[in-house]
Image 1 (spheres, protein in one colour):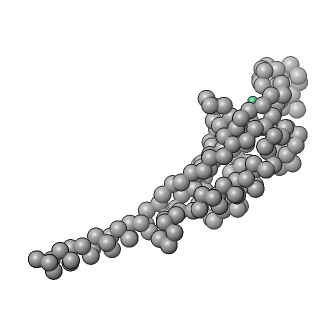
Image 2 (cartoon, rainbow, N blue to C red):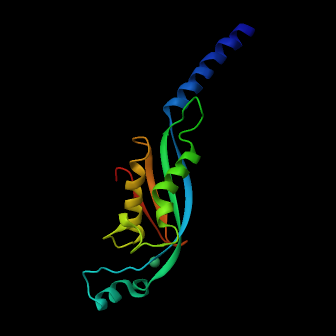
Image 3 (cartoon, rainbow, N blue to C red):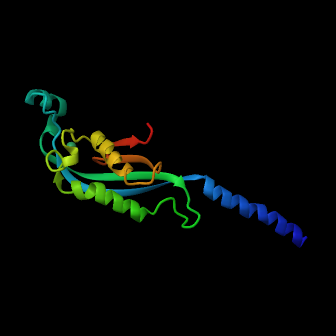
Length: 157
Ligand code: NI
């Protein structure tokens, strides 16, 4: 009887280890920053910008929230997909340090020529993170402009 229990236990342990390595898991880090912007297209007239953007054509600020998702197998040595402290450091160095307490229309060289909508921010943030993370890890970047509005870029979409 004792022998039977042991033999039954072995495949469970092996199966669990195999499952840990094969299954992808999503993890996420959230950071925040404050920044000012105005929505206007410099190629359009003042009247046209007013018509398109209304009050958003005036300089104003947001408390932005940036969510970054990565996905991959769990490293059996650490139990992590990716160290979230390391992800936080990458987000800070590549994005937050440049945009926090800044005017997004004028102060950030890598946003030059872009209308700083949440859509455009999400797209550029994705590009700036992708080059700093292991290939295939980055899955999704979401920028919350207010607690009601967000824009999201998905890898491969
Ligand atoms: Ni705005």
